[in-house]
Figure 1: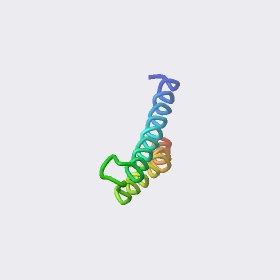
Figure 2: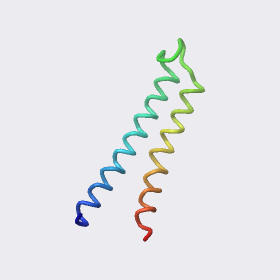
Figure 3: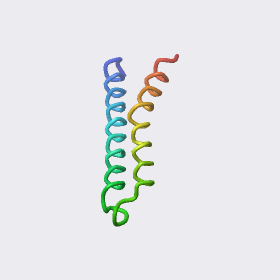
Figure 4: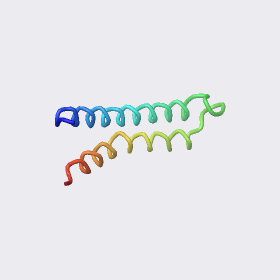
Length: 71
């Protein structure tokens, strides 16, 4: 593979990870404040998912890029 195709695939992977984290956080907010799981919302489950989504959006892309920089 050429260098250009490698960085394009890595960029796409980082964007998909960030998008997945955003969707997880939005699902957590919907669970916390909506009636998806139980009537009146489930704040504990919802906020746990929001925390997981935020970690997925912020830390995982940095860990991936750091790993790709190492020889």
